[in-house]
Image (cartoon, rainbow, N blue to C red; front, side, top):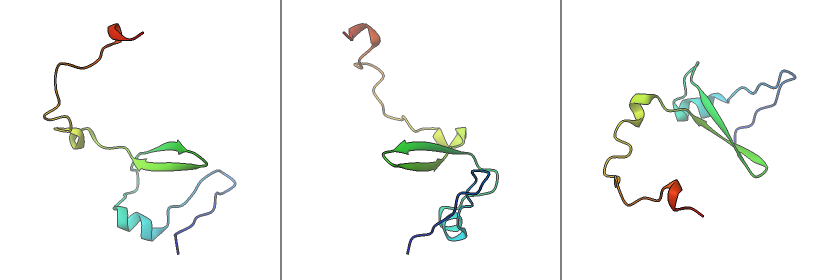
Amino acid sequence: MPATATLSSKFQISIPKAVREKQRWEAGQEFVFIPKGKGVLVMPVPALDQLAGLAEGARAGGYRDREDRF
């Protein structure tokens, strides 16, 4: 059975312990909410050091620019 939570009168939701532990989420961590159809995708915002090397190997040229749009 999936973990569930109830929206409080202050529009707050407590993330179930099983989900927090599996995802290794910590108190004070920042999240982004992305609307998806009738639901919402909740993802932690990565720290800047976690993004290092993310675009390694990406082409520096040959990409579309604003000037070649209609």
